[in-house]
Length: 460
Ligand code: UDX
Ligand code: UDX
Image (cartoon, rainbow, N blue to C red; front, side, top):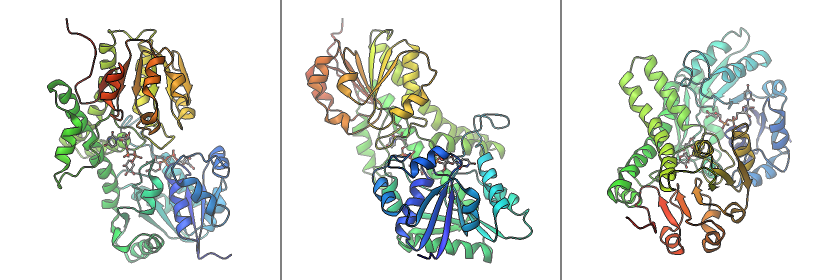
């Protein structure tokens, strides 16, 4: 079969893999090649056990892989064959030198641009998919403009998918944002990308803008989302003091149309590869321009998140007779949210490390993320066990700490769980997903987030 055009993507991660799979699925007239330097990742993309778990992803990949979707390590061939090249490599927080701990590390973005420059055999459109600092397109352009033979147009097309609902978000996006230079060539390149998305996204949801607005909009979206969580989490601490219920507060404020009811769920803290990294990126940019007050404002969103994670463990220690040493704790969930195997920046990493520092014996239960949990905790001192079976995890345990809102944790038999645990038994529900009254009636001492605890202890 002959294709209209070939699209390549450098980076087969949580963003590149699902995004390109959906493009291939919705645009059979295009050939899509996803490349990555990581051979093991590519091997898994070509196997039955994909490296990324997302509801609906397996089905889509099975449908189009080998037809118009290909995963490969041959970066050179993909660059040569494609006219449109997405760059979806990781842009982690810099761990060295200038901007350490704040600025994004753009070396993979630059090396991708250099690969494109090296292997290009004609004009190419380069699409920034990775979240980048404002004006990153300019940096890419600087590398590519070295070419005397070919013209490269750089577009910004940030991805707004959330993990766990990636396929749905890609199939039915709120908007697709495409930024370009406002030159005739820039606008022409932008139109090419619009044409691809228009295969399944209604035109009015495909927004075009100047490239800097597009880059900043991605950082701003993540900062706003994270800010809502830190706002509700900050209030959850107050609720616990004054006897208010954070879920009622969330509901009441969310009924105001201007505020809206989404993203107001109090939790043990937000995780994921983006929020912290992107806010720190924003903070760094503000500082670079001398906007220290603006930087401090956004930094507080990250600080409140750290506070929330620490507060959760401090509360456990205080309520469990001020010591966790040798106590067994079943940690329900390690993924940073439900329906993903991703554990990057998961609150569970901080919580489990702190529990181990307190010399607690930890058993982690997670239906999808145990493989990543083991990697995250490699070399950490202390006793950690892993299981997919919650009943096994709670044997002789003193406490359960719910850290991910997986449905399976709602569906288990807590009478049986209680019977297997040491008494007094505690539940710390870091996601407010369990039936707290029921747990209390069974005999548990229950500590939700942002609500008064339900305990059987008598005040003396
Ligand atoms: C990444 C960024 O972290 C995020 O900021 C951005 O919005 C989208 O891209 P994600 O897909 O979740 O998100 O990252 P990751 O799962 O780490 O995937 C990146 C992939 O790029 C990895 O598989 C890595 O091997 C690959 N890569 C990295 C290359 O192929 N070439 C490189 O030079 C560097
Ligand atoms: C986020 C953005 O939502 C997405 O648009 C962007 O492209 C990437 O970053 P993601 O990190 O995958 O997506 O998941 P998200 O659903 O935003 O959740 C992030 C964290 O916030 C999770 O740890 C989640 O549990 C937590 N969260 C979310 C809350 O604690 N409360 C909420 O109300 C919502």
